[in-house]
Length: 461
Ligand SMILES: C[S@@+](CC[C@H](N)C(=O)[O-])C[C@H]1O[C@@H](n2cnc3c(N)ncnc32)[C@H](O)[C@@H]1O
Image 1: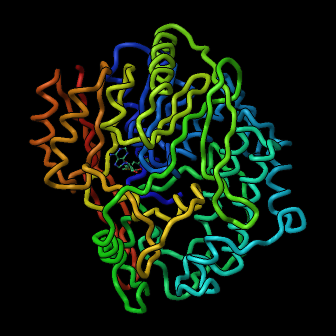
Image 2: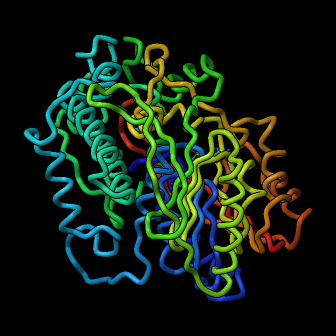
Image 3: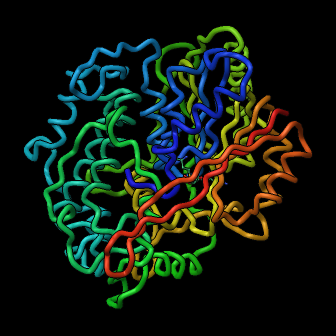
């Protein structure tokens, strides 16, 4: 998936930097990707670290993490199979069967739901994020996934596999210049193709670095006028201000042990939201230091489950914890060895730029606002010049981790000196850097090369 600030292409630089900075082999460590996004970094480390924690405030990111990290089977076999999921907890045969049934219109009949109504021209709200036909398929499949879950025809692992597959596949036919802050006037070639659900693959769909950055000046028709993408996303942002998270959920991987209850907004066959209760189970098996982290995480999660903060979503799997929270709320409740931080580095809010992914993932009731149909979203302190330094300081101060790594580039809201000052308050500080070449489209859509310096700030606490 194209994602602003994706570290997919920088994962080699990050991995080397982190491996060289820590004292022991990665396998002895618990690693936390606190601003996981597409999970490109968590995915680069999974399989090597003892235990993995991910978090992101956006729900679509939680879905991706729940599949790419939560469905990742430890000790998997690199069997050189050409197809997608040799290391998934879900068998290839089962994955294919589920995907085929969902793509089959006889088994998953067409329904005009929220995506069609709000984000396709046929819905009558004058937005064209998807072709009519594709919007209807996305709706139909989304609704069917929810009904399979409520009828217990799919497991929790399969549910997130299918949701992640839907997000990745929908993104491929989106009629945008990369992010969802605005749509294009005419259907672009990829958006005019027929939608097909494809399995979210552990090796494919990894996200491209800063591709969204590359479209700032593409001309769009969002309000029937031409505008830059950056302008359009930001002009909409100023009209929304309150939190959208209406979901309270706590759930777990499904292996054994303890019952917890989960409340989610699910969709009925008419695409309307209903509330359903589901039972899931949690498992605790881990080793060495990772084991003690796992135990402490589980007990924190239990006490958390007794009295969960509002709007908290998390899962604890065999060797992972997956959260969907504000990082600064979560930080005091988790612990580990390596904390990797990749917060937003500028004012562009992810909740605005990827609002339709949240809508597909949540499929809840909401009121789309304005010409772009934005849903309400929470703003991030990391996107605010006047709040970002304090937010970072709070995170570092309260982190119960031995090593902290921060990715930030030279175009960020915080300067090098400001970051260094914060880090030095809490331990031994070092910094690595890499010149990073990216492509940026100019207004006439010709690409020119552009470079930034990507910094890795390192703290031994
Ligand atoms: C630069 S992106 C991370 C990209 C990610 N490393 C990747 O490779 O895909 C920043 C992420 O921080 C998340 N975010 C922003 N503010 C947050 C907050 N206060 N707490 C948790 N996540 C936040 C955004 O949703 C976004 O996914």
